[in-house]
Length: 119
Image (cartoon, rainbow, N blue to C red; front, top):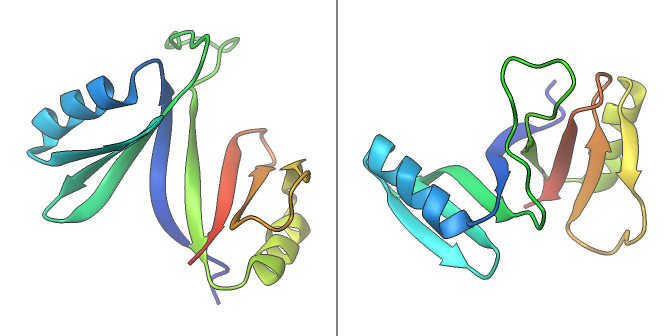
């Protein structure tokens, strides 16, 4: 049984609206912007999202010493159960400051960040 389903891939960037505009053009989609966040939707479905990252440094590829600067959001029905599941699989919690919000941040076994988001 799956613990989660993928929600959206989120890329950090200096200007979410501008980068979303680029990908919307590439994908033939539309852009929705709210504060420091932007979504690209294709046929009404969100396919990518972008968040403002102060001090953003563009990744270098290929480079083993720099970040790819994105994370995956997974949509879950039960945050506590999903958290227990990913921890059992080797994830590490990255942000435990506010357990009341609708998402929790983890790192996969290789250190890449991802979020569990309650729907």
